[in-house]
Image (cartoon, each protein chain N blue to C red):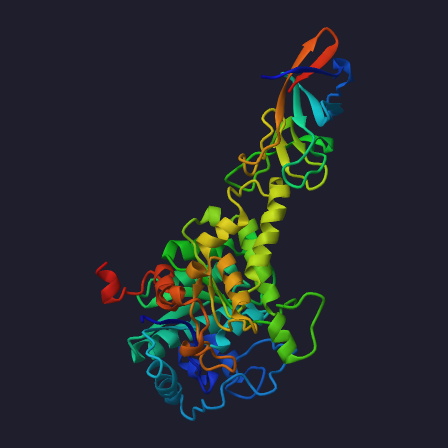
Length: 117
Length: 360
C-alpha cells in the first residue's frame, strides 16, 4: 500500500540533474527523462553516499571491440562519491543489477509532483 | 601423488651450446660480437642488481654440459619423484632485454632448437617451453607457429620484465599465435635490464634481496593490463601462467581492480565480467617462492581469497637459491593433489593424464 506525498513543483525538476527533496523523512532524487519523471532514494547501496547528486549522463555500450559507443545519454546517474552507474528508471547498478537503490512511482497533478511511498 | 614441476631450469655451462643452431649474421654476432661477460655468456642487457652469491644452489656444480642433466636427475627429479618437469630454460628469456629484436629472435630460435634437440629426448619427464622475444610480437608469433606444434612443447615463455604492460594491443599477435597453437602464455621473473627499463616503480632499488622481494610489482602491472585490455574476451581459451612472481599480493590487486571497474567500467566497454572473474578462469600462478609468514593461517586465508586450490601450480625453481622443496610446501592439505599436479594438467593440455586420472 503506497501513499502519495507531495515532493515539489514539476517545473522545479531540471533536465540534466536531480531535484533533491525530502519526503517522509527520506532523501529522494527526482529526475526528468524523455518519458516522464522518475524518483530514486538518494542513498547509494554501495556506501550510503548521495547517489542522486552525481552527474546525469550516458555511458559506453558493451562492445566486442575497442569501439566506444556512447549510449543511453541522460538515462544514467553516477553516484556522487564513487561513480557507480545506476539506471535512473530501475535504480539498478549497471555492473551488477542485483545491487539497486529503491525507486518510487511518480505522478503529476497540475503543477504538483507526487512521490508514492 | 602426481607431481608436475612448473619451473625446472635446464641450465647450460656455456651459451656456446647454441652455436650449432645459429647461422649467418647472427651467428657471427654471437661468436665474435660484444656480450655481457666472457665467451659463453648469453647476450643480454644486464640488471643493475647483482646476486651477491650467484643464482644457483651451491650443491649444483656442473663441469661438463651433460652434468646439468645428471645432477638435476639425481638431486631433483629422482629424489622428489617428479613426474613432469616443465623446462623453463634460464638465460634465454633475457633475450627480451636486447634492443635489436632480430638478434633477440635469432637467439630464441637457436635456444628453442637446442632445447628440443638436446633436452627433450633426455628424459620422458621433460616438457618444453618455447622462449620468444616479445619486443617484436610478429617475429615472436612466427616463432610460436614454427615450433609450437611440437608434441612435447607445452607453453610460450617470456620474461616478466618488459618494455610495456603485456595487455597492450602491441603484444596481441603473440596471443593470437598462442590461441592458434593451443598454448598458454607464461611469464617468468626476469628480464630486468636493457630495454626493459622499469621493472621497479619509482626507479631502481638498492640491494639484491630487497629488489627480488618487490619484483612482483611488474607482474601486478601485467595481470591488470591483460585483464583490462580484454585479452581474454578476444581469446577466451587463453591461459596465462605467472612464474616466480609471488602469490600473496594477488587478492589485494584483484580487490582493487574489481572496485575500480565497478566505478569506471565505461572506460573498457569490451569487458563483460569483473576483473577477478577473468583472473579465476585465465590466470595460473606458480607457487615458488611461496610466501612464508610466521602464522601460516595468514597465508592460507590469502590463498583462499585467490581461489588458490584452483589457481596455484607447484614449482620448484630448481636449481636456484630460493628453491622450494616438494616436502616443504605449506599449502592446505586438501589442495595438495590439485596444486602439485592436477591443476597443471588442466593448463598444459598436451601432458598425458596419469593412468589413475585418465580412468576417471
